[in-house]
Structures are given as structure tokens and as C-alpha cells.
View 1 (cartoon, protein in one colour):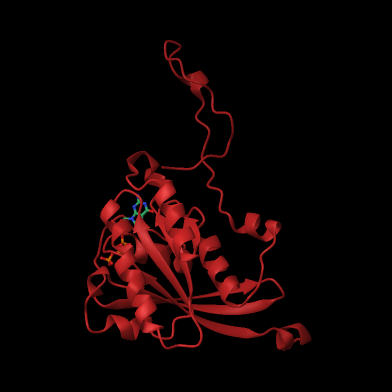
View 2 (cartoon, rainbow, N blue to C red; view 1 turned 180 degrees about the horizontal axis):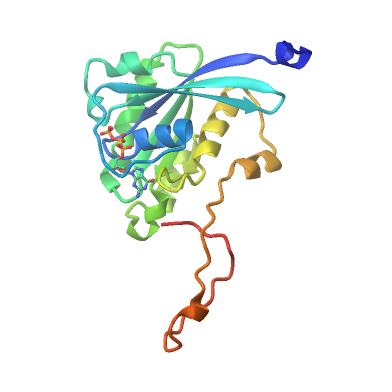
Length: 221
Ligand SMILES: Nc1nc2c(ncn2[C@@H]2O[C@H](COP(=O)(O)OP(=O)(O)OP(=O)(O)O)[C@@H](O)[C@H]2O)c(=O)[nH]1
């Protein structure tokens, strides 16, 4: 083992994903841990686990143990046990589903209840998912901001489908837990830019008038 490997520390963090069914928790965990996305909805019964090792500034190796909690567990007997001991909590909602946003108060109440008597509190973040469906948005951005301000939380706007800001979201939560501040360059590096092919409109019939694309980079919907 090299000196630098011996020096590097390893941390394990428990991150819990909470939110209504179909808000995209499994998809976010899969996108983060496996760089994959499935269109088919398969309800999580109970919970699933994902593991991913990341490196934070200062050569800090961190293994994130992601607990993907099924949306149907709210009100169930096991939920407090799943939340217990989490260092990070992501409250996930679907920007096209207002109810999933409204119900976050209940999910958050559970988190607060479980940690009522604990000396250390988890780092909690609000996650707006399905940003690729911006045209179908029903939860106004102001509501998202207000929730963050009222509860003093960090907010993230992501898409498990396109991968937009998913890695950054988990990275920031881990950094926050460990008291590490990411600099601008590190944040930019983690912000995934989705590249798309440029359509060559010059080969299209001349009758069609289309503005040429301004850039070779865009978000895929
Ligand atoms: N367009 C779009 N669809 C998404 C996104 N994330 C998830 N989905 C879809 O939404 C549906 C539900 O996603 P899941 O990840 O299974 O949701 P979940 O929150 O884990 O649901 P439960 O297991 O019931 O708690 C699936 O059909 C996904 O393909 C996204 O960012 N964009």
C-alpha cells in the first residue's frame, strides 16, 4: 500500500431517501450508484440498499450507504427504525406532483421525531426531482425555496432521468455531514452536462424554418 493510500481515511455514511411513492427515490439511488435509469415503475416494498464510494476534497474516501425507503412505509411500524442513525436525509418530491411536495411535512416530522432525543441531528436536504419535466411542473419553485428557508435546509433540483445534478446532490450532502466545503471548481466538475447531437437542418427541406441550435450542449428531455 502506498503512503498516500495509507493516509487516506475511509468514512461510511448512512443516507436515507424519503418521500412519496413514485417521486423517484429508487431512480435517484440507481442513477447515483449505477449510472442507470429505468422508465418502468417498480414499487419498492420496504427498502433497498445501494452503496457508492466517492472521494471528497482532501483525498477523503467516503462510502455512502444509501437507504431507499419505499413510499408506502409512511405510518408503518418500521419507518422509524429505517431512519434511525441516518447522518443524511434526502426529502424527495416530484415537481409534477403537488401532493408529493405537500406530504414532505409528514416525512420530515418522522425524521424530527426519530431524532428528538439525539445529540446529533442528520443533515437534511430537500430534493426536487424530475426537472426534465419542467413543462409539467405543478410545484412552484418559490414553494421549494420557502420550505428550505422555513426548515433551514439545503435544496437540490435534479433529474434522475437525465442525471442532472444527481451526483452533486449526494456529494454535497456527504460534504456537509463531514463539514467539508466544496469549492466552485469542484461543484462545477460534478455538475453533469448532457451532450446531445446537433441536428443538421441544412439537409431538411428548405420550406421548414427552424432556428439553428446555439450550442452543442443542451439538456435532453
Ligand atoms: N421523467 C422522469 N421520470 C422519472 C424520474 N425519476 C423517476 N422517474 C420515473 O418515476 C417513476 C417512479 O420512480 P421510482 O424511482 O420507482 O420512485 P420511488 O420514489 O422509488 O417509488 P416507491 O418505490 O413507490 O417509493 C418511474 O417510472 C421512473 O422511471 C425523472 O427524473 N424524470
